[in-house]
Image (cartoon, rainbow, N blue to C red; front, side, top):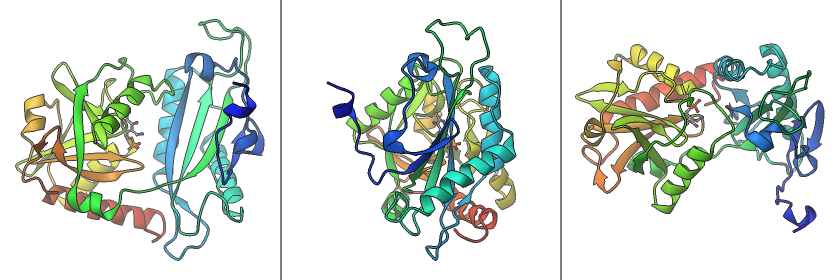
Amino acid sequence: MTASNAVVDVSPDPVVYLNGEMVPLSEARIPVLDRGFIFGDGIYEVVPLYAPADGDAGRAPFRLTQHFARLARSLDKIRIANPFDDAGWRELVERVLAANEAQEGGALAPGQHAIAYIQVTRGVAKRTHTFPAGAVAPTVFVMISPLALPNDTQRANGVRCVTAEDKRWLHCDIKSVSLLGNVLMAQHAAENGALETIQLRDGMLTEGSSSNVWIVKDGVLFAPPRSNRILEGIRYGLIEELTQAIGIRFEAREITEAELRDADEIIISSATKEVLPVTTLDHAPVGSGKPGAVFAALYGAYQQAKAVETCGVA
Ligand code: PMP
């Protein structure tokens, strides 16, 4: 197969940022010696951008500061110098967003919510496992894509998840582009008619293949504590704040497989799923088999927080 017939159909071809240039996605290229390609040596972020209800341009980010803080933490943990400060990142995301909003018939239909995908790798260098000896510029990529939120049926009925042993490495706190473990778990879910795989390590709940997992028992919300075994979702801190605002008791502690299976409610959270009720786990109903009261309260509070922060565009 030649490079030309390996090209992916990216229509309607969004404008992306790659190393200082704004280019159509179809023309964006990185050298094969990029350490992101060779070693998965890089990190990424996904920031939701909400469209105003009236269909106008001017999508607004949600929890941008927190996303940039996690981006900085991930870079720090793998010792890549942050190529921008928060203001620089913000300007960059706004620039790529504006270019796509200006594109007639482009990737973003009016009223369509979006995500900013940000990726930074250690750059291009001769293939050796150790970090490049000299100063190597990181590869910086920013892409805007449409965001399809869960639909009303998924929220009203809840979704199905399956469980599997968490076999990933022990730096799950880094938002690394080395996502093979998560990819295999996502595929496992898809092949088993589920939305997500909920992972367990040594009999304890960790997280979904691309979400954090919460359980409810007797009105109390529980989640595994922040640690190297999970990615601290930006919704982790947000949900913690929301429980205080709406008077739901929250406790971060280890959750056993038995507690997961015996939960009254299971909820998953991520930038693209917001909060979503899980009503079937493997082949068994979760609690009553219907989305519960804690989910309903959190969903309402989430929408309100979003509306406030994105200037009433929820
Ligand atoms: N855990 C994993 C493994 C994820 O990929 C994600 C999605 N980024 C999350 C948790 C949730 O993070 P966030 O709330 O920032 O989307």
